[in-house]
Length: 551
Image 1 (cartoon, rainbow, N blue to C red):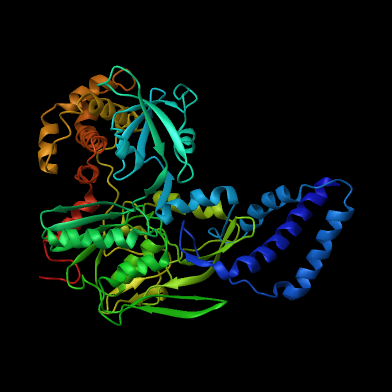
Image 2: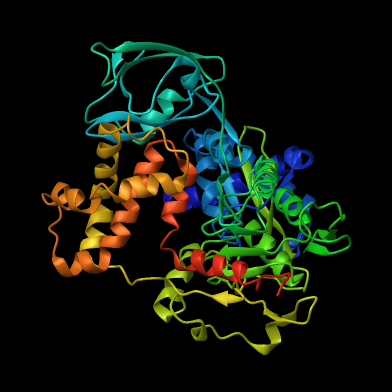
């Protein structure tokens, strides 16, 4: 009997739980545009020929029967927790149930902060190594330094084979105001140093890099979180004050975030009355959002970089800029998420992010790629299919029907049907890929070498005034030769592979050394130095070919 009853019970418990929870959480709902959510089919309030009140009464009656009459005692809470994900997975690929135990962690990246001691770390040889101390956090105030080894926590040993990233995160983070004591080993000290911290809010940056190259301001955005607009606006102002005559905005790998934050960012570039985006759903009438004309950067040319993993708010941003002929889009076709989720907080602290509407770019495009209800794995494999089909290498492999053709405000053709198509296609670069390169990257030996080199030469690496100065210094250190000798025990090199992959490996080594020495912007500048899409974007801006065009 259990084989029959349990699936039925799952369904019943879930349905009741969702009905009650949605009603409780409805007033606290907020738009959230996250993960890679494609648009869902419309849901009928009275689907299946039965009204909501009739369905609710029937489910309540059946639930009472199972609770009161079933032969065994049931753990209804666990059954509901098991049932909800199963049912939600039968919806569109991006409606999502988040258990109460996971909600805080899921929200951290978008909320822009968490409570902890304020360090970035890496585990090397079963020891927690401090890579960077976050400015303004408890660790910086206490005097913790990059290169320190955390060896004890609250007087208990904290190293060895049982140390994992998850364990470190759970140990160092905690409620704001709570205390933790660490024992730290430092190469310049003979004895273990003792620090006691009071955990505090630690900012999570989503604008992870901004720097000036020639007269072009580069800004990389990892997601659209609660604080992203403030970070973005500050970066724009800073770069303009330093002489930026155009901007290269990097949204590659950016999976999205808050819709309203994205809208505020686009508003900085568009004249008054320009349509930014509109949303429409079965239970939501069309809602248009227009620029208010108060943007501070309406004239400077812009290039936006996108790729296969740019999704959701990234596509709203790039689609709005493209449709208004306000930016040139460079890279590869974006992911293809055209949905809006609304978050319903449930009464036990969990949440349901439910697809409630589609979003449309100003020209009328819904960028959502096709999907089948309940086929999440197949949906996520679409990127692999694109790769196998040759789309990463050749734009001509993408076939878009004329029925999906739209026009920008200036009459340029743009297409719906799955993602934002770039104005300038840049294929994936495989020129440096060899078996030796793959083995070095996958084994982690490049990172290990960079960490050990940084740790050994920390005093020499902490005084650079510019990226060019640090790059010049590192290029004189014969890092590739030293790396080959270091890696030889794990990965054997050969002359042909080094001729093809050596430049990229050296660039990665230098980038990681810069990051581990506290130069995050230098890391991205070095990391981008051989990147073809990045270099093409710079070229477009330098030649005055970006919208609005200056030549």
